[in-house]
Amino acid sequence: MTASPSRPHSHAAFARARALIPGGVNSPARAFGGVGGEPIFFERAEGQWLTDIDGLQYLDYIGSWGPMILGHRHPRVVAAIERALSRGTSYGAPTEGESHLAELIIAAVPSIEKVRMVSSGTEATMSAVRLARGFTGRHGIVKFAGNYHGHVDALLVATGSSAATLGVPDSPGVTPGATRDTILLDYNATAHLEALFAARGDEIAAVILEPVVGNMGLVVPSPDFLAAARRLTEKHGALLVFDEVMTGFRLAYGGAQEILGVTPDLTTLGKIVGGGLPLGAYGGRREIMDNVLPAGKVFQAGTLSGNPLAVAAGTATLEELRDHSPYPLLERHGARLESGFRAAATAAGVPVSVARRGSMMTMFFQQGEGWPVVDWPTACRSDTKAYGRFFWGMIDQGIYLPCSQYEALFISAAHTDADIDATVAAAHAALAGM
Ligand code: KE4
Image (cartoon, rainbow, N blue to C red; front, side, top):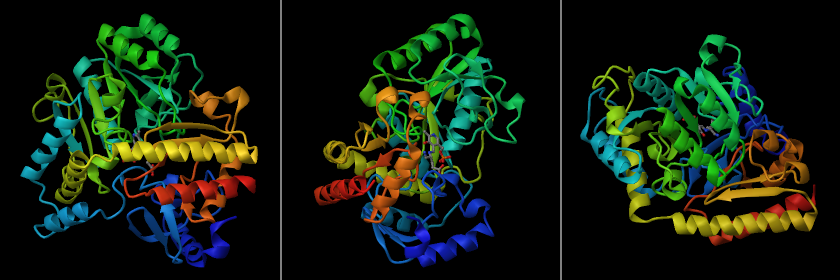
């Protein structure tokens, strides 16, 4: 099933966009490459609902790839943006709102004593890597296959084998020089991480990882993996960087680090922290952050960093999350959706493995050899075509899931018990038809 027959306006819009914008989209994740067919164009959203340009409505389980934890157009967020808008849009000068948002972030995230705001998650991770290298005077950056940290040259490296390998550029235009100092391991490969540090610990500036992975589908860390990363970086004078662009304020108000009990040296944030407007951030211990220009010498800058509208949206979102914690509700919804999807797959005789943390979940279409999914090699064993059939089966019932097997779905605080029940019923129908 593709978008065009039942969505003529999206079909026409996509044809127009393709002539103007590479692939017709401003981010490849939206292109439906992982599920086939044409992307659907949307024109409005409210709460847990999306409306496309053909007037069709969908329960939204992408939430703009994470930011919309409160649902779309939350009244408190809309009002905050409108108040900020009435005073202007961008000054290129400091505002007190930025300090207020900084105070909220510092109060929430265990590892952050000082924070710098930027305009995207990519800017946050790029800046954190530069800062780690500037602070330690070292070059080596360790990353993990299946962990995505935005389109930073040094972190755009192929998913390598489970042994420590020198990063190989993953995209034309990323030069060998850009990834020469990038070391790639498999996620949860604790023994390999220990061996790497034993051999090259004094070369390593930082280890960067998703403390709960969303970008190969949902993969949780094994208990010893994060503990080893924390112990080894401490022992060898490297920094531990948690990329919480996706998990920050998502898994808990203090992010994954609050629930996992491991405190990194630096944390990167994005998505929810901007409340759906362009805002990212990176922060950590004062002694590290005070190396960032103009306090220190590590360069980083941005015309729209700390933009007043984005700061207003982020501040309202964090205050709402702090004042009315949605996390128990999100956990209840997640548990019901997980058990419902498992039951639907069992009833249909479709082999799947389901991974979930809070309101982030992935149903991998595979079982047996690759089960459970613990790293990129096991995630790669998924039947992406089967996922594509499931995706379209759900779309045809008005359920908008991530358009890739290698993404996590997101439940919002706007979703209701009835929405979860309807989604499970749709999964039964979609899987039965596979
Ligand atoms: P942005 O530059 O897209 O704001 O953030 C990059 C980024 C960094 N770190 C993590 C853990 C992330 O998940 C992301 C971005 N996530 C993808 C979805 N998996 C964004 C969707 C897209 O690229 O359009």
